[in-house]
View 1 (cartoon, rainbow, N blue to C red):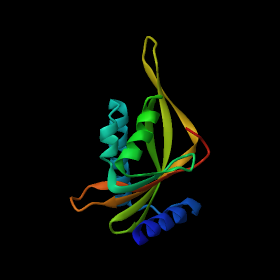
View 2: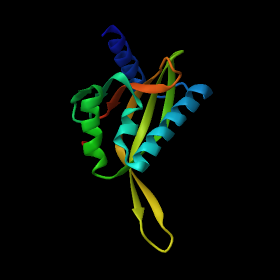
View 3: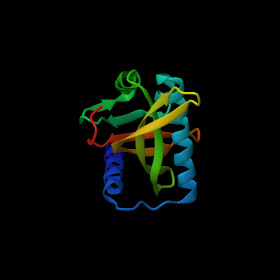
View 4: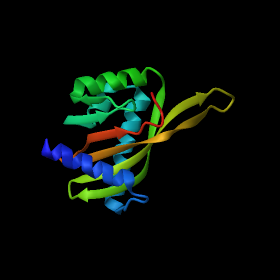
Length: 154
């Protein structure tokens, strides 16, 4: 519980910062994580999205509801992914500890537009997602705490 409170404090710290400090290695980790999220979104695979969360993860949803663990997080993403295709773009990254980074991410709704030349457009929401990524014992980075701001109710 103390660890979770510490992570939430780190999340609040970056949320209030005007500009996050970026370290190149931390930025690469965040970009690689976003690529994994985007691949899971593109394939519509909720289980792949779940694999990007730590076992004890918390997801603070746009409506203020807190999802604890895989079952509740799965329910959130199943409902959201039924509504469309999405993408995440890293805005800022901050290394908090050797094994912890905090990212600020823009969440977009992706629409394909049929035409002679198929195009893809991203509709960006006003809000952002803050994610605390922690390196796991196997070396992988997973979301331990994720907070969606409330600018856009989904």
